Image 1 (spheres, one colour):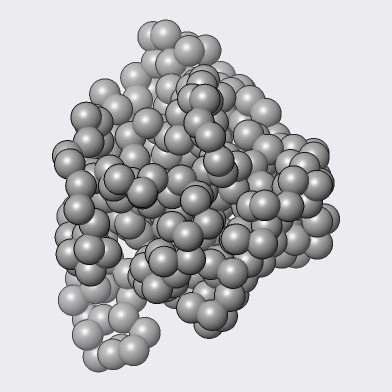
Image 2 (cartoon, one colour):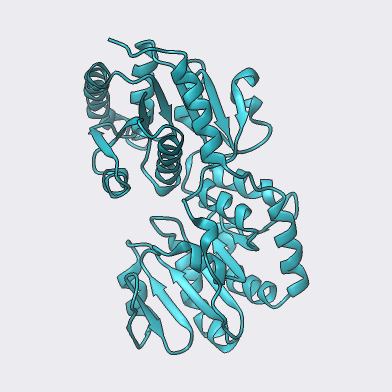
Length: 370
């Protein structure tokens, strides 16, 4: 069987796509898998690192602020559709899998128009533009939240949860005294979270909390310089370890161990991050990004907050509230236990495998297309 998987732009799209591909390989070791991404975006690096072939399209997002610049965007979209047509004719996929993002829109639209069944995976509680545009062309739509009938036809929806990174539950906690705070701003980093933590470092140090801080590549050097951290190079990852229990990294490759050590996590409210927190039962303070379509991260966060499974600090309030909220919460063991218990009830297990099973069902109904 041949599977065409498309999507990307951020880790929130790429990690689920790779997890689905890995699950397909486990269930169908002879599977042929080809990814389609957007040139210059993160998937063009991460997918080959995961061992899969990827083809890049020149597709880009529309410029809503300066509409007159969209002539070239439309030209690139037409080029991308033409390129996908050739890819499909050469690769002859049995089924297409779209996880959201610019490339997914072009690839899945063209695949459906060429008679190939497509399955969509929607990570967020508020459906993305690409998947909403493709909903009528999809055979199945796998979702992570209840109530998605307001966006998609009910008879196509399957509640599977979001695939998470493999081996996420394999982390081991190191025996450390005191409390451990993990700060993650998503694969690209989060300026508001970084600024709030930087301003609150004196309070965090005074409280004796061990802090592991992923700044994101965009902010790493600037934060290091401004933190005044006197440190030695760490043995793993690209980061620095301070004498006062402060570790600063641009990216964390060993997330299972980092999660295992954390008593509390500060995070954006991206779909993948929330799925990981639910699966691991981690108490969390969520700071939804305001810079996303349809404010979908707030919708993601409120799905947890409404069930007393996480704490919300709005982006606009982070500078004043984030560190004080974290300090109060991390020392409240009863509250941490309540959040742990409640967030665990929202976890969806084996999501990648369940999605892969649906993909294979669709593939078996088809034969390769000419």
